[in-house]
Length: 264
Length: 326
Ligand SMILES: Nc1ncnc2c1ncn2[C@@H]1O[C@H](COP(=O)(O)OP(=O)(O)OP(=O)(O)O)[C@@H](O)[C@H]1O
Ligand SMILES: [Mg+2]
Image (cartoon, rainbow over all chains, first blue to last red):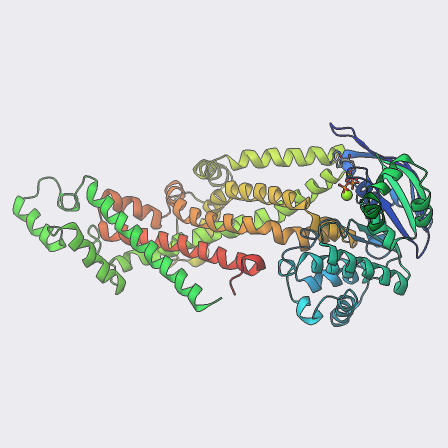
């Protein structure tokens, strides 16, 4: 469904960083792919390239991002608008600032429908309430009328997820969707994403720098290091038999009950 | 909005007016010059001057005079003009109408010029920062920004002089100095005000355009804007629905200041275009030491400033739920 071929992104500003270097990656329909890597390894840039949201004026981009056969990098802005939200849903790293502070949460959730369909307002509201129900936002009718600053971080992230899945996209990109949250909300969101994946069959690209979180959710893992993909195989294979040194170090860094027992 | 909030704002309003009128009264007692000698001339007899002073109450100490003025002012009696010998209310009514019309017309021009142009300039500035731009587009944006900067820095009286010269003397769109009062012919009255209003509006529109552009560009980099694009929003949609609402908050406060500024600044433009408005009357009354007139105008201008700021606050609260008082 999604096929990235030899993608490179270089900043053309004074820093001249190559954020993504010759990356090739495939995502099949319904798959849950984890993308892991340390801070600054280029995960967000890769995600932004998939939806055509990378900073155009300060970067040079090469390669292909094929989504069901169309190269996203060659799309006109109109074609991109049709893809975003409808085919590719996105949840971003920063739950506190990713929602418009002046717009009711419910309206932001149903906005994707407003942009892509002719659903009448009352029906949109119903669908938004349903989506809010499915991401387990408390008291949807009340939350619909709230503004982002009246929600907790976890609730905002749920609202973001609701708005990303409301138009039934084929691919959901969650860029560190749980990083800013406490452990309990984190695992609730992961369970939620797993359920959404099972129910709607939407493929998920789950980006994180935390391998233990990825292990819980994903059946495949790609490891990114300094702009390159250094490892890409099934979760089990990566954990049992990591090929790359960097992956080994990442795995060694996960605190587990086993290891702690061994150390004492 | 609660009753407590309303009471608080009204309280602030009353206190502000009280402080300002007190200060104006004190300032006027300190500066040299005397209304009586102004009225009677240099060679009036000593008895006549004393008589006149007690007639106007000027022989009383300043606090007695102030409270007497205050007492009649709050009951709606603004006093009698020393130099025109008619009630201030009567003297001011058509002057206030003239200045209010001029100021409002100028303000409408500011809105009509700066809103569409500000939006357009912002929209193309955003595109250029997002990459998809031609060198032609970039040149247009730079030229527009530079022109805006120039217009912004021309003082209104100078714009007024140029407009008088070009549209009045050369093109003859209007006759400079041929002001028609509202009671004479309303249409001609408004027609005469167009060019003065334009002189006031031009530099201020440029300021508002600059502010809109800066505010929009500032908001355009926010995360929620990226979210809106990620849902499939187009450039205009995201600009109008998401960015604009956030970007307008500083603009609304500035517009309130602009309108108060226009009212206060009408003094100058009324001189340039020979409009007998409140501003001209204020200048005359200050030099004649016509206290009742000056005090009333000071209170009017202060009220306008306070009310406009209150209005801006209310509008911002309506737009921004985070500062809303419930
Ligand atoms: N505007 C910019 N100008 C120059 N370099 C940038 C810019 N934005 C990002 N970079 C660089 O691009 C690289 C990749 O950044 P990216 O945001 O994709 O990292 P990330 O893997 O998402 O990190 P994190 O886990 O912290 O979110 C980094 O080295 C960063 O310094
Ligand atoms: Mg990131």
